[in-house]
Image 1 (cartoon, helix red, strand yellow):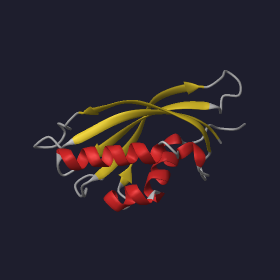
Image 2 (tube, rainbow, N blue to C red):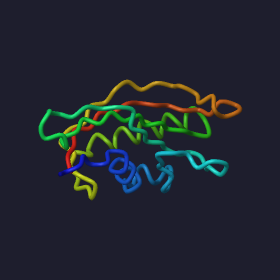
Image 3 (tube, one colour):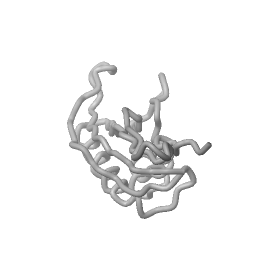
Length: 134
């Protein structure tokens, strides 16, 4: 049995390895923000859904991910979001240890300050749907 590729792990690794992204966040690309000791700016990658590309084989995946770009300021968060989107626009052209990406589709970009922080943390977020397999 072949399991689907881990889309969150693939995207976090890809963004950490991209020189334009790492120039802004170093290795601060997470699936969960570290509690109590996070440094800003940072990116968070979370799978929010997705469906198999076909009923068979089930390992062909269309993973829907949300990318959160947190900054110390609104302008810094926007720069980070735009940089991450530009990097991800070429993810299907690169080799990955987690799997093979055969396509990517971008959703809208939105400014949604995160109310989990006091004061609310500047954050731009966008969705991407990756078509991938192991």
